[in-house]
Image (tube, rainbow, N blue to C red; front, side):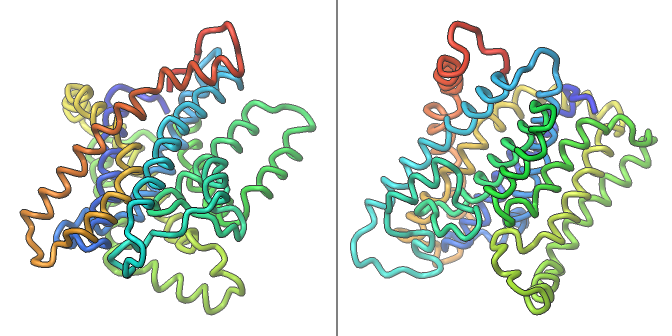
Amino acid sequence: MKLTPALSAYLDFMRFAAALAVLLGHMEQDGLYMAWMPLSWFSHEAVVVFFVMSGFIICSTTLQKGRSWKDYTVARAARIYSVAVPAIVFSVCMAWLVPPQTQLSDAAFSNLRPIAMWDLVSSLLFLNESWLNPAALTLNGPYWSLCYEVWYYVLFGAFFFVRGRLRWPLLLGLALMAGPAIMVLLPVWAAGAWLAHYGHKLPVLRPAQAALLWVASVGLVVGINVTDFDVTVRTFLKLWVPGFWRLEGSQRLVTDYLVGIALLVHIHAFTHLMPAVHRWLEGQRVRLAALAGFSFTLYLFHRPITQWWGYVSPNQSQSVLQSVLVACIIVAMCYAFSFVTERRLPAWRRLFQRALVPGQPVAMRR
């Protein structure tokens, strides 16, 4: 499927909306009152959006001509570490500021854990979700999904660039390192990559059909959420599948697969909406790209802030105005942080470029 300017703009919109949904959901969890905003209900579904879009975009950019495994490695490493390293430092610094003997609860520093060297090493190597590794990044629960995505990048790179007899043994070894919790959601990420590669073979839709499928796909995701269908399925699987609880963050795999399918339909339907919709989005491309340009920072930096804000000044009066103001301030803070994270991406590219391909220009820009 071709990544047109309109589709690129729409994916930018989805990326920012998903990051915002995660922020609003965690504001509610941390006592900052966001339940009144429906977008806050979809913080988990937003992670599935990230996975599908990640597979789609990574596959689309990698398929471009002239891209080598070194280009791929430089692009992925720079993109991830430009935000991950500052996020780790930020999380640890915020945890150090927590007063000793602080009373913890579900709404006060619920993500706080003692700072340990293995937590830092594991976070830097993205091993936190592998097997039963107890490591986690203090004050920053959302870091779990980044560990999933990095392993998907590694597996995709091995599949795409390695040829011959080495490919499948290498993939098996990497899958064993990643662990079952990560591997069980690989189909969700791979579905996005499949759409990028084979989407052009899907049926052509008339605008009316596309609009109907576009709405229906949204309806499916909303229906799964508001009916608590995922809770019903998880409860059943926990009762009947021994050790199911060990999947931890992947226990919603059944409904995550359904949401992933809905997203494939949604993106495919979008590409066949009326030309006027595409023209309008093309006109908004710069604005949407600006929002998406700090969504990664928003995702990895917001939780330490909401944890602290919920502790210092919880929204006990359930003021909508206060919750909106806090959300805007946190978004603005993360936008400012992006000037030392995502917006420093060229410097990180140069760093990894010198390590892998000294003396050559960076070929991959995504």
